[in-house]
View 1: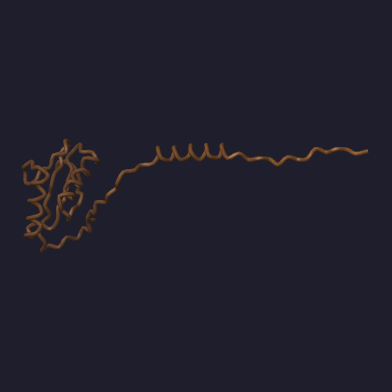
View 2: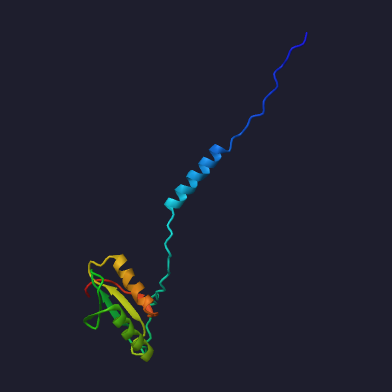
Length: 132
């Protein structure tokens, strides 16, 4: 007596589900990623011990609308940057302190720093905000 045992079939693994999963992951990570060009803004860190012989820093105030004020006058960013570069080169000021006014959010203060950095002012520091 002869019994026929059916031959075992090899399991076939399809690639279609794997490709679907990889495609879904690719789309997810593309949508979840940020493709912004991040730039760094170098800021001076305060040591608390200022050299008494060095000139004072120039203080630029930022209002809630993003306006830049220097020496009591509102100035356009290009005009302000040109004036600050000239004062830094002449040695009249040691650095530039950007001081946000009352109610100015961080994004507006960073925009002011970015504007001055983009205009060529390099010696920047972020000062304490407020009206004082």
